[in-house]
Length: 311
Image 1: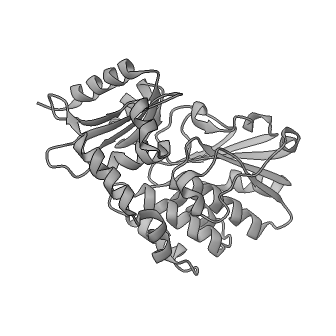
Image 2 (image 1 turned 180 degrees about the vertical axis):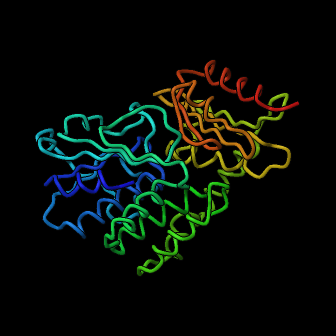
């Protein structure tokens, strides 16, 4: 499955790795993991990672993006990770590269690169990158193993989501053969300070439901500004406050920003991905995202989600 991409990596002296905007643990983990695997196995190559700031995942060693001039794309291989659609890619210069490749685990939306490996059987892109390294008999250094394990943990919901399979645990076990500190990973991911706990409690009080039982939270731009926290903490960080609620099978977190309303869609039962795609987003069957123009579009999305509930 990975032969063409491995051949391309071997062929190019310079490799530039992209991922999606507003990165989560899987985007950062797969990007750092692949970069460090290439560096360890092909030390003669130049390897760069690009994109917006890593945000709360900046604790992952090696996650700070490189400054890459346009000229460096000449005779380079660009690899796009963990991204289902062109509009979601952080740093749009990947077409400047002589060759391009994508490795992804989301539901297919469109072709992005010349070489593509997309496989939804993986719970995370980090799992896919780990499989690439194992099948290609490549060394996985500790820094890569740590980043990849972090992404597997976040995208599988600490191995709770139903995307978790025997394959997931097999690959996680391979990463744990390296000297990684799993306790430190979990501390960085889930240790809450008092203020964050208070914030979560505030969002729980803001949960509303539709007539058919879709749970949602809507945070207006003024509210977001008043909170004094980063956008990620509110959008993706608070969608989990609605998970595990009895009788709730679909939930969505709306967050107004200067760029539009960020929509984080989740479900324990239904395939909500087509709704995300309808509004220009994408993702997985039960975890997707999109950005819409305004509150009216957000409420139209909510109505579409509500219509999915079986009565």
